[in-house]
Length: 541
Image (tube, rainbow, N blue to C red; front, top):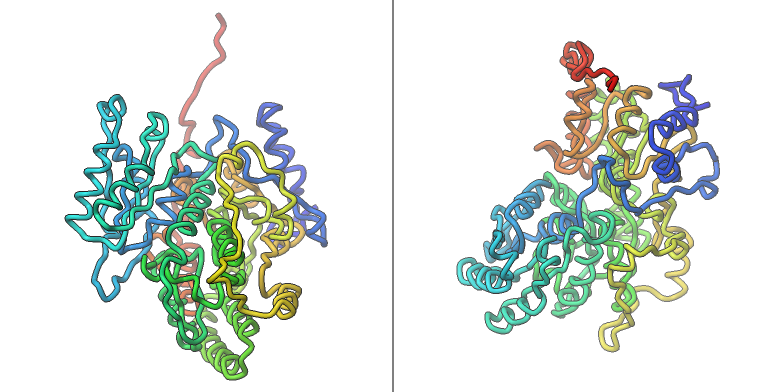
């Protein structure tokens, strides 16, 4: 039996069995391994399947490889022009949907509000689009003079065989501007995760380490932070207050030039583990920069992450300053959160969002006295659920083998370990460096973990667990709200934010309180509760 306070009578294992019975036998067999009822006190004994192809015919939240490359990792870099080589619909889909805010640097360059596309038509599919792409790159350079240009191939481009790499090399030589070409055709891999990996590889090979510029003081790179609603600016405010300099952000509010010299920083901080852990691991191997998994979402999580940074640098003055900032910020935010916590205490939530966000926001919900009762990722791998220690044990399938694994070695000139081997081992044992414990260990017994959730499973969860709110994405936001359950979109914050850091926690609490305690939800009646939308009889012929 579940030990959920909100649903003490729900037998989650029986509930899962009933869902699986609604599927054909072969589908049920596949989905069973993607659903986990947390019951073990020791999470190391529990496992879940992930990063497999979605069963055809099942509606899920996933995006494509192109969306992961252009829409997530590269798109937020605002001083670059990002060209979608494909139909206009692909470009529009990846344009401003995640509200990655950008503040131009001293050069004033900002192209984040533009949508660049080669707008491929039928004739381009027949005769090829390479000439059109070359012309688009030339026009983008002559018109805007960006600091760099990226080209993103979509499904039709891969099918007809346009060589975007050759076009990019020729354009770069002719125009004298860096042109990064990504073979991120949407059909590659099983989800947008493949696009993240492809983006990481190209950034590592052709951007990181191309310019040496010393970064004084306590410097960090933030990886996997996309400045949705201004999150990166709130994180920057707190770190600078502590005396920590952000050398580069990958890639929210990111600048091309800062990424080229990011290998000079002292520490990599990973927010979204799944979208950018590849880059962190390769930078450690080549340049000696260690990485730490952090979470800047939530009051306690923010403070814990700051203390991780202090532990790494191990400077008494820096540690003292960080503790002062934590005390000051926590005291300020506690007064503001108190009235919200009183109204939200005991409310339940489900989270089905992207990669690490379904994990990160559980800390913030608990800060408000709320209970996460079910959670899952769209495009995670098993190590996102179970922890980074199992990464080497995961069987690589055919889809993953299509994504290149770079062979990286220490750079003969630029490799420089930031800490001694003894110190590094000590920090790894403390889980300060090189470790992510995953989401499952933070999910208590009596909760549910669902990978790549389908609409059927989501609807059954809503009917059975009756959550007070669901944190999800745009693809299912309005499906959820038709069940009279408010849904907070965590992919773009529903035009709110920031939600990161201490001030962000107050913004989030305000929004959640307005949604959950809005009386309108009790007054609305879904149309399918008034009368059936469809009716049919069994044919007699």
